[in-house]
Image (cartoon, rainbow, N blue to C red; front, side, top):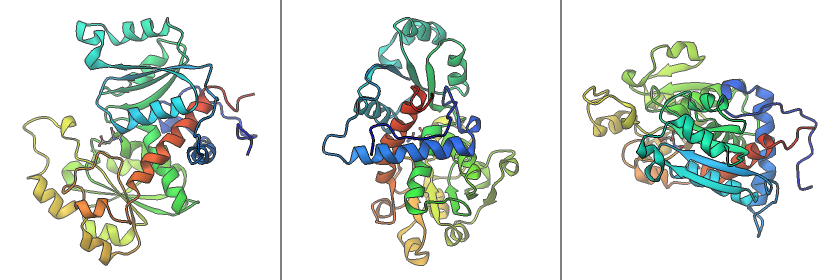
Length: 317
Ligand code: NCD
């Protein structure tokens, strides 16, 4: 394979703010490019010099383990100069506004900004403040596009064509940015999506999302090819307004158990992490060979390499 994948597709995006702005062809193109970077990760020296002239800042205003490490690793594997910013050690604590922070960072000649923030819309806002390419690494409960891309990439390793494939997403739907990006991406690729969880975890206009809703875990697991469990986002729920009686009761009704694996032998288990063992699923389920949770993490580096490559001007003539 040549160093940069050859392609005739004209990828015209400048940013990755959300999958809502990407067409089905854009999404398929990113996933196709990611296959090449996934191969690189298996080489003895998993590095390419593709971004060696680029400077990237990772701006994380919200906690993150996987996404931050994955972006940083992707950038370093491609030879970029990387600077990291996190709120705990920055002048945000001294009262500096987001706009001032980004303008100062930008005067240091940055090519790309990866941003995670608790407020929806921050990545869009940054596109109006600086000239760099902006990549959304999660904005509040709005979108988390690279997570959905890596989820779809992982699904494609099992089902190369996702058209007609049955994906169940189980858990705290209302507060999840992962589910929003996945619904947008999966429906563009023709997959069927069922959301499963307690009524109190469903967003208000759930019918408008082009998906079905179920409150019955057994029926959902019997139906699906893929079961993606989501963490309960306690940090995004108002204190004092309990949406379910207890974690134990949630697990009882909506947790995936070893007995489900015997009863429904066909579905594959996914989770964006972090997993709360004993809540979304029994610990043994997360470690079973039906779960591809760690593959998702590996694939995440390749998918982020692909999108960084494309947004850095790769493939644009
Ligand atoms: C998700 C997130 O931050 O939205 N995690 C991730 O990026 N891997 C999901 C979560 O926090 O539950």
